[in-house]
Image 1 (tube, rainbow, N blue to C red):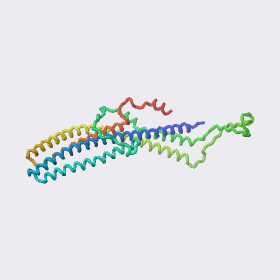
Image 2 (spheres, helix red, strand yellow; image 1 turned 45 degrees about the vertical axis):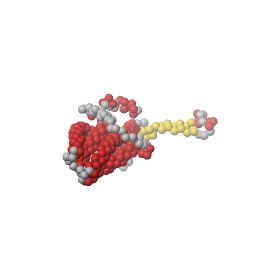
Image 3 (cartoon, one colour; image 1 turned 45 degrees about the horizontal axis):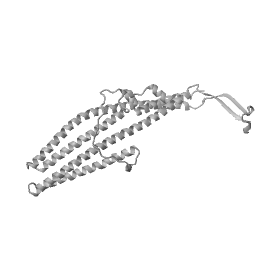
Image 4 (cartoon, one colour; image 1 turned 180 degrees about the vertical axis):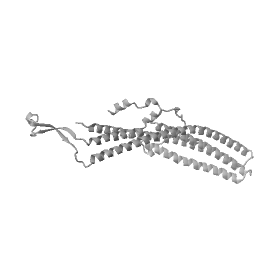
Length: 340
């Protein structure tokens, strides 16, 4: 008999603890999905960077031939040839550096999908994407879907129920006991009425002298509950901070990428004009190498910003618990039906 609610509160604590474990699993799944998406986008951006280096290597090989021919006829000095060679080989080194970075992302993706790195590969593809359109206003209730918040809240509920269990320790336990025995174990007499001896009666037990053990348990349970409340509040505050950080980053990145696109465009044009001036003998090849290096650097910076933007979109979705569709908000009734 659950006179003091100890069994009921124990059941509440166990249910909340089970729900917390489910939230912990959901958090691990969401984290793995977020990491997988981020690794994939970063890998595709590296594909684009490698492609850009390969294109520049082809151009620099052509430049080296032009510079070498001009040196042979005495139009330029050997310093220009050395500069062209340095530019070509340094670009190759940069491309090779990106290739091992790409391999690391590929291996990380393999592990996340449960495959050995040696048995998994992703062929290079052109970068193609469409960023999700984020609403200007987002309901804070979306954060209820975050597994870490659900985990902290269920732990708090479990700790609250545990306080009731500890308090019930002050009161005696009353239970009904039934014991059945057989006078003999002969199979043929198993169902004979005289072979059964039933005793049913109440038993009352209580902790009269526990030397403060129950009081200490209640105090400990209340302290754990207070700690879980503080952890829950901190988890919610951290969730709001993450969402705000990613939203601000998303807005700033849009403006930054627009400015970077202009810088890249002008750098390309400067490199083109400088090379034409070099072919006409108006300037030295050092100017060509400088403007080409600037153009390549600006293009790489633009791709890096795109990579950051893609990662930011994934992080924002994860920070919101999986998206921003309010139709997917949890319903209390549905949750109760699930836990039954």
